Image (cartoon, rainbow, N blue to C red; front, side, top):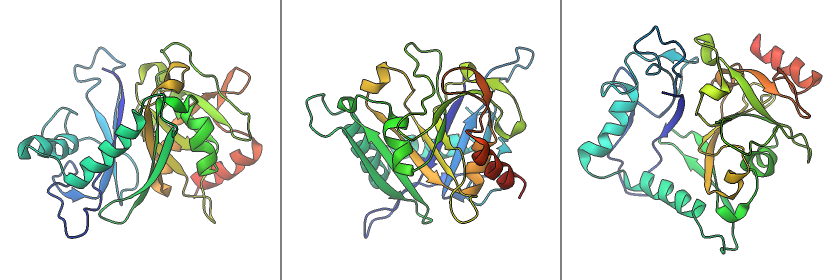
Length: 278
């Protein structure tokens, strides 16, 4: 069992419409959105290892331990996704958004357009950006598109056991570093090679106090084959979510080779440490 990151958002229904489902936390309370990080299997002595998870929702102060196993129907994931099976249909607006972006990311190679981004708004008014690329994009999602669009250097977690892995890239004015060692919430420390999740976090925060950086959760690895594959990521700029993911990245591959801490440069490191100490 490897690690998985899940982002669930309930989007605004069309004018005059109603949404038949909601996101729920572990207590069964309706929430606007949440991030769920399934922790990997790293210790054979624990029978439930690989089935525990961390949860973080709107208004929380960071990661909290999941109250049940990830496959329990009474947990946040089970309560939320289970509604789709119970009702026999999915929320119309949510389906349209997902299918629209997924269809776009699956366009044939002959299509002239290769990528599209759209703004998404949750019921509670939180703004997200969805990036979807088609096969004809033929480039790295993060370095060639997401980083320049967000105007941010990025640290990227992905499945590094696939072939043709793209090394960290500091060209074109943007630094995109491959994460090597992870510790979400300080609960557990593991290598990127044990984690199937695919997420990216900006190296520094944004805004006046540089506290609200970007976090993106998606389905694309940084390798040569997936430059030609459709897929994408959904990004949020939020101080709490950013700090939770930024502090999880312990070691990164530096541009040119070698592994070190994930501070991109001295100036970025100063701002980063200042944010963490607030």
